[in-house]
Amino acid sequence: MSLISYKNVNIYQETGELTLKNVHFHVDEGEFIYLIGRVGSGKSSLLKTLYLELDIEEADEAMVFGQNIVKLRRKHVPPLRRKMGIIFQDFKLLNEKTVYQNLRFVLKATGWKTKESIEKRIDEVLTDVGMTDKKDALPHELSGGEQQRIAIARALLNNPQLIIADEPTGNLDPETADGIVALLREISQTGTAVIMSTHNLGIIKKYQGIIYRCEDGHLEEVSGQESQQTEEANITEK
Image 1 (cartoon, rainbow, N blue to C red):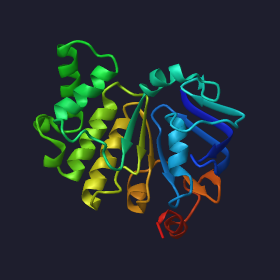
Image 2 (image 1 turned 180 degrees about the horizontal axis):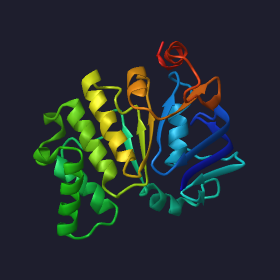
Image 3 (image 1 turned 45 degrees about the vertical axis):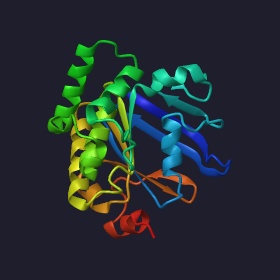
Image 4 (image 1 turned 135 degrees about the vertical axis):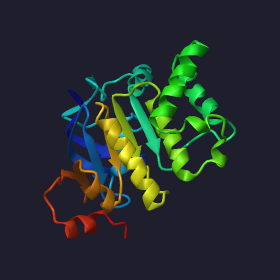
């Protein structure tokens, strides 16, 4: 099942500068996709168009969950976003709220009503990410890896068809980063597609997926096309 279909899409930054042109990008159910490229190459801008933070005005086709997002009215954005889970490098947890309160806040904001259904769903996602013993902890009491696992739990709350992860391991040590990607890979194997931007060559080699590279204003699929040395030159931030 096709979740994302971009054909000849031009993507602009918030400043109005063209960052990626003639983008062709396709995501199917259950796929695990890496987005690589140097800082400023357009990775985050592409991801923002997917979760409708950035508008697309020039495209032959820009479909997200079967909706033409070029013509999508703003009132239809929230229902579309509920089909996605979004994970950021800096976690974006509410610091004054416990893990349970962070997750409850999202569920109540997205229409969950009963205390019983809310508590059940929170227990389910915390079990999925191995964090059931941290329900009453505040974010500052957790390690970076634990905070990111809570962020993944939050992304899973509404049973998304797609998870978008923008540099989810950027602030983590290698061992913790490995665990986070392993978890995302497991999630993709249940049918939820995952798109993850990263600079981590080791992770890309260990957990195989479809690879797209942003470079010189273009997006290109490079899965299996390049040697390790060439990939490393393009992925490394320098």
